[in-house]
Amino acid sequence: MSPSAWPLEPDPEELSALTARVAAFVVDQVRSLAEQPSFDLDGVEAVRESFREPRPPESAQALEAILERLRPAIAKSYNAAGPGYLAYIPGGGIYAAALAALVASAVNRYVGVTPAAPALVEIERAVTRWLCDWMGLPATAQGLLTSGGSLSNFSAVVAARHEKLGDELAGGRIYYSEETHHCVAKAARLAGFPRASLRPLPTDSRFRLLPEALENAVREDQARGLRPFLVVANVGTTNTGAIDPLDDVLRIARAQGLWVHADAAYGGFFRLAPGGEELLRGVEECDSITLDPHKGLFMPYGIGALLVRDGSTLARAHRESADYVQDVSEAGSLGFADLSPELSRDFRGLRVWLPIQLHGLAPFRAALAEKLALARWACGELRADERFEVLDEPQLSIVAFRLRGPAEQGERLGPELLRRVNERRRVFLSSTRLRGRYALRICVLSFRTHADRLRDAVSALREEARALLG
Ligand SMILES: *Cc1c(COP(=O)(O)O)cnc(C)c1O
Image (tube, rainbow, N blue to C red; front, side, top):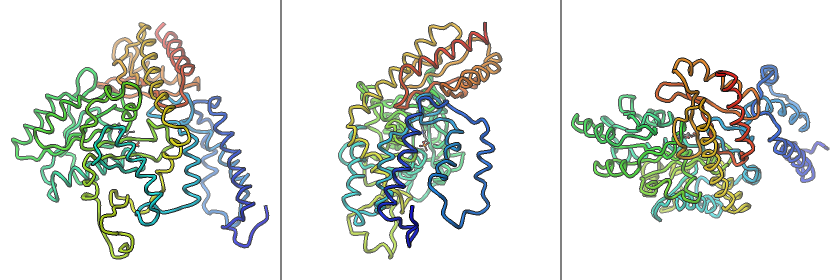
């Protein structure tokens, strides 16, 4: 490759050559995903050490050599993109989104304020409009793409705070079940609420918020002169996929004038599957909803979403102005920068829009339906084995279970079972604690996970459980 006069601006021929090399590299990575181990950290320390460079190079390095350095760094990891990734909450990362990222970064237009790229902003608006429609929100709703569920939950707390408490935060109280994702407590603290403002509440036998507990806590706090203002309801908890009783939560919250935020980061997109509307009934009534396209829409990491029922609330909570943006802040034209803490940001809308255009929505619906079915299948298989205790019928696509037997045996053998199953490197499962006891989880959400891989997971569990328990 001939060095050009301006090395930061390779000529078109060089650009094509560089792009072709990267394309060959990533296609090779993606093609081999199913054969790659489900995780591999053997010898990662040496690879890690090789990147502790005190100074960057002053002169150019060959792309080929750079990519070769990346290869082991990618390999020595949890294979979060592969079909065996059943830990935490996977998404997989559909390839079309990577193509969109390339386009968005290469053209590098600015979408934070509408006048800077009106039609591109409209693409992202179309995406957020679709999300609102899929969740059953009215035409007055508005959405925003964020970097992930944590930031969505943060802006939701800020919007609720602004609407319900104004500038006086003292006495504000936030309610949610003990099974709620820890980023909600983080969001509340970042939004100015001390720990004493947070009211984690007990759940029922299926890990769903107990409505009586909510009702009592709100009444108690009101009697003490405090200011209940927000309930965060789960539409799919991370531990077990539990869906809080939205009808009850909405009834109690409405009677007291509380904002209801649905954390549907994991579960929301199941509304696209057949029967999904019934499954997530009530989500369409909530004041705000967090979704994570990088989970249930199989996008790569870095795409979350926040939807608000009354579209004007986000701007009221976030908008600021400054003289140097006077040329681009036309009256009545709100840009994404007015709705969120971000000003400069990537064109993340294209990473959702392009894949949906390229594939159509039908395969996404089908993949979501497949995940629900796979989790039900795995649940049935584990139930049929007397060595396992399934902790709940899957409400979505997570199966939580433990070895049957006394608690202290589970504490000892549970982690060993997990270690042995994962050590086979076909699947990667994770553990948690439920009601204080060790539990394992199978979380099916990647579009790459199919029946064959679930069969591997179940047979590995059965064989290793038999080896451990006899
Ligand atoms: C993943 C998750 C979050 C956090 O979202 P990030 O995108 O990881 O920031 C919040 N709530 C639930 C229920 C989740 O599953």
